[in-house]
Image 1 (tube, rainbow over the protein chains, first blue to last red):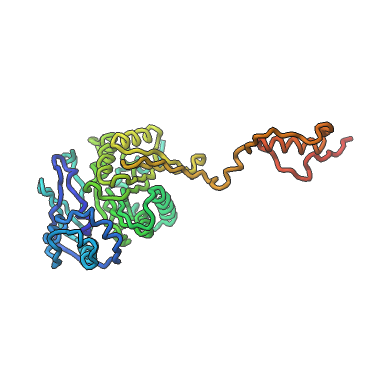
Image 2 (spheres, each protein chain N blue to C red):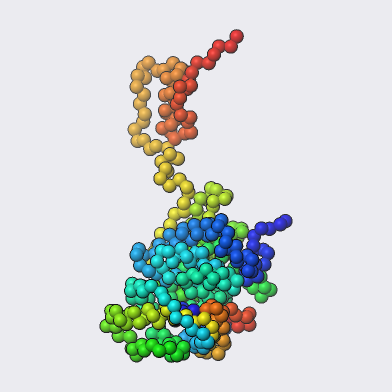
Length: 125
Length: 280
């Protein structure tokens, strides 16, 4: 699972959970992969990214990548920043670990890079 | 009565086990069909040209439809209930990210995440109650309402599916409309039992959009099937000397007249109106 996916995933399908975002990451195995850089895609996705959630995800995994504290207008045009976003969003792959619902503490296991968001009947609203 | 529909045999997470999943990476016939359905579904999505979009693939399976998206330069996230199918997708090293989930429990994504959604041959699974607490209508509504939320305004969702009865189609479209979608069914090749394909084409808010037309297989030669429109009444030359009834010229004139009326007329040949040999 890449961080761009994490940035979109919520646990609000659980009964009683309002936002369910951002899910906390407990990573056991993280891999670096290479993906072709596509500037258009990053600029298109940037307004949709919850920047604070991304920052906390980066610190959850404990990788060495310093993202600026605030996402300013000028940064959105900055090539260096966009490349860094590309790296963080698309080139980090969480292979094993778990996602934790911020409201209920429910854990969703990540196995072979695939988060398991299946629920049991009693959890569904 | 024996049924060949997979959704009658077992729930999707059971039916698509390792064996069944392997078919989706090895059987060229299945791959070919899935690829063509995906291409058509993406065409119906009507994405902006030359812009890399973020697409949700609902029931992505082994990622065949996702690969078509990748080839077109889009990114995607795939959701599927069957872990075996997702494992195959992972083995095939698809570009999209994969999530294991049940679409009947809702889409686990933040509002406005996607530029569009496609789904190939998955929706009919929701019409079945695989567990005793499953209520298809409720699950469909949950699915559509959460899907509506995670799409951008004005985005489309295109579902290719195999409904069993017209009642199922009604049930699905009703729940989609109740969730706020507009749009409807696009049927390709409606006159052929084999080639017929159904696409549910849904629009989420935004400006009013026109439903695309289904393919009929007659694109480009539509003129032939219609009568030619003529304002002026046909006047026949030399009315004075009308052709002799049953003569060759009379037959040719009549055929020409019928052709103008759009009737089905055999083409002229050297046998048209030919004198028959005299019997004894």
